[in-house]
Length: 640
Ligand code: PLP
Image (cartoon, rainbow, N blue to C red; front, side, top):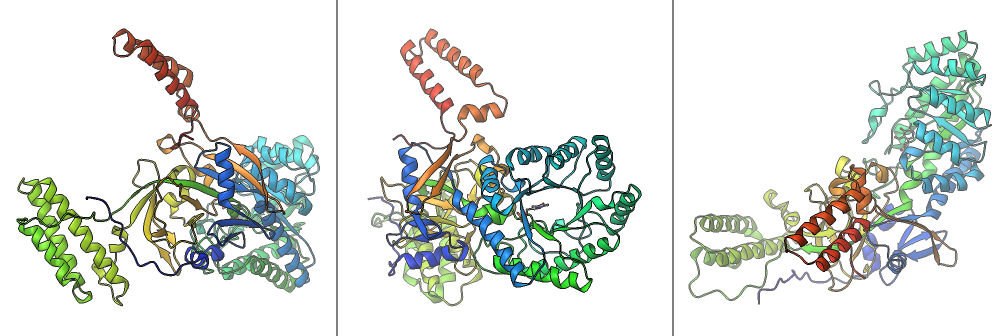
């Protein structure tokens, strides 16, 4: 029988603790995720844990097809609470004589649901919003209810943007215009005079302190944002001349996003404090210091100063800022300002999980071959010989020989001297040899350099029902690492090594870097598929930046979104469903007109009736299918 036989690894004793360790759930999960005894991944808020699979079953009952972006509302709330409480503790601990006011930068996840939840829950802490454009400003103005909350206006501001901000001030909001370039100042002065509303302003400084990590270009001399020391002096002098220096109340700096190293944050705070105290000496009525974003997410769970990690906890971050500010400002006898941060990534990353089902697997495994024929081609005989000298000492030689014979067979096939059946046997013998070599390597201390990529070259490809470009663009664009794990069967040994491909027809549409137990891994351990059963994977920590940066590659649209709230009695509520894009939606984004398309298709079918290719009844059926597809989901759908 020519059936595939999956390499049988000896199944080691296995339990959920081992899975949790393997997938690093407790390292990157920040206490939000766990595993039940029967191997299901849970989402936890305030000691209440709910299996994600139960939520998925709820989706299936509601006919919500995969992929689904799942939002856990309570995680957003808890993150806002953790941030505010951690600053409060640090302020108490260090006798800092002012308070913390957080703002959420809308750009990090602009979805109305997310921003509304942050604003609503954040009211108790007067948690405000940071905006970087007019649309974000409008979103903030129509969302915030608590006037004590800050609105920080970053980015380039035209007259209209400034007018909206001035209106906000008039309405009682604490709205700051952060001057990013000298050209903004005259606009703010002119508009405020014209409307008779005094502005509250900030200045964004260009920091010399450089940080490591991916988003470091927002600091240093060549940063595209912020004022140089000379420009700052010009701003101060202009405000003095206009008798408006008292309007300058905030100092802003943003070292970068995802700052992995706490030492660099502290260094940045020292530099910002020096600017702060000198601007106070210049006569500015500063009362707020805004340290921007940067609080990192430990995506890899390594607790290190690696790009995808952070070498500090939330408490250490807050303490580092509060203590450094206090020490530096006390030296210059400057009153402590309100501390503002614009944490985006850390606020929203944990709350979203991309869930998808696996559609298929491509195994790079030999099939069970029939017995060797009496008169086989000599190349096939030579390949069978390799198994006889396959020992740890001779793995390199076997590897070389297998390649040599396989390539010879391919060459002879091209020249018509070997037939398809013989080539197939050779390809299978080749795979068999490579798998056996790979097994031997597991127990070897030193792996020959040529063989280092062997495991990856034999890895399965699991095809996931999602588009990387739509849902996980940072994996493609900047090699971002997100935890990817199965959400069930964690009590079973994951015997397969795999990479994950999406359903776009693009060779970049794959995930092939994973969180390993000690370092980044090229493959992920997964379970063999079981016929007739779904296998669900989750990509975690995807709440920041992914949704809006995603694109329509292959016209895969927005996924279904489901928001869930976990209750204290271990139940959960579906609080909101947002259906993903339909095929008609995505086509209209690229300027097709669905109605016209339907009409054209009807005409094409009518022509076929006239030409006798189909009957009128068949035409009706075809039109029905076409119309239903237009209303349907862009992803792979399974009939219930
Ligand atoms: N504030 C500003 C000015 C930013 O440019 C950014 C993003 O880069 C943020 C805040 C959010 O940063 P993070 O997501 O690291 O908290």
